[in-house]
Image (cartoon, rainbow, N blue to C red; front, side, top):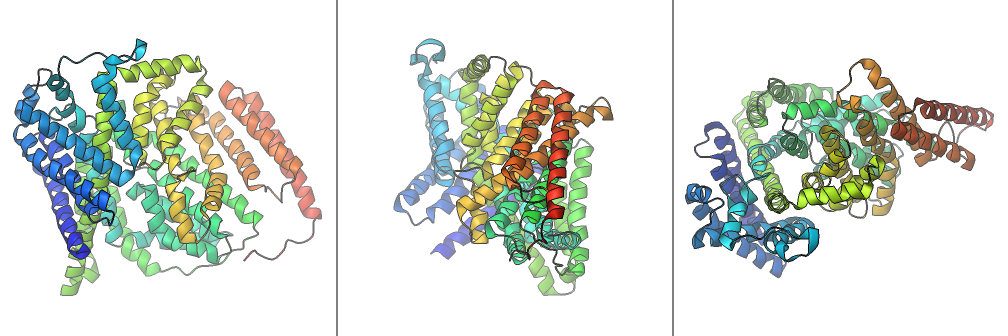
Length: 631
């Protein structure tokens, strides 16, 4: 029975992928009508997948949601124009019933797929939307003249509510990028990342860790999903690191942090970057350009942390075999789609157009492989790989789609009731103009909201509720949104949920909390980056001259080295309590230099760091020979 269910879900997912691909080319109906169909399709796919769950309650809830979506979607689609005309006036009874049905279906399926956080926020926002006028004082919202009037804001034809806000981005961009990443995986291109990682690992101690960072960054920039990246890359990189002598928890932590960075690495980044572009009202390629320097610094920070970890555990260089034929075979199938995508984005084409042609180039490169056209079996295998990619991408896009639908309801409620600006004003008053306090508050909120949620959902909620507070106290909108996005990404590796660390710990056969601790030790350097680019916008590409980068780059370098050495308890040699105090003092001085924009503190931090390493060097030269490598 389950096999039949998988066939049904797979077949419908394949048709969903073809539909979204075809709509991007021909657009036979409006964006609003497409959004209605998109919500219905993602609800259908998620409901069918959840209906196979062995739990009786979950199965029946998914069946109920399925029936609601199947009945409501065609009705709303046929009446889309009339619903649009009635915006701000009132809906018919049938339109209201259909609207309530699709909203209930989306919330139920979001809860089944992702847990209660986003669904709970969605329910709370709707409660405030309808009943907020009964609250006292400044929390009170304006009363709606009638229920049918209020419902026009929630199911309008692509302009607002469940079919507006971020749902069109899900329908026209995110869904297609999920297919793009899945196709790269199923057509075999991911082999290239692992072989390049092995090649890179030949040139340094503990090279498997460097290989993991390289391969996971390359894979992450096309998948844009931390947990999926850990599952795919970690199956290869974690055993390789353990073989070279890394402790299981350290191997899992390295893979977790390396995969996390894929969402902030251009040209693709995570799907939240597309929402950020829409929020800022700028082309996506400008977001990617802003993210470039911080992304480079992110991975440089990871390398620095790994270097200290390697020396602490005295891990030696072990040369892994490299399959050169695999690199040659997969290089063009990877570079061609990525080049097509990047060039079209640089030429100011929409992300939808760019990813369509990138997907087409993946399919073309798959059929141009020698292994494909040498035999009929090769053609069958190529069709099978492409079909599997379309199905996998559609299912991933559907899972995110239900979150986007509920998040759209949340956004509409906050906008219509004016709760978002009220909340932003309250936060701005609370922080009292203290920028550091405001940044810490936003960072904590993003980490908390990101517990068990996809990055894009956590980012959207923070962007709506807290980013306006940052802009009120003087932060540039680009920096404020990028700051929120970074910490929404970091939420995937932050306890207590830390989904990425959970997956990595299972692959590594290590304890979850030990893997979390290893991840957090490596995260101390990257966490510094978003604070720096808020105080020094030059890191986001707004430098007037190259000299504007000197101070923030120096702050990053000194701060990352000091924090990483402190977290790993190792510099030139094993750190003493006195060494750790000096590393911590240098880190604090770097923080003061960033917040107060005073180079003197930075110079003092650099001198303390140099002095600490000098003291350690003297101890290291006078100490006995290091022990044999840890195995």
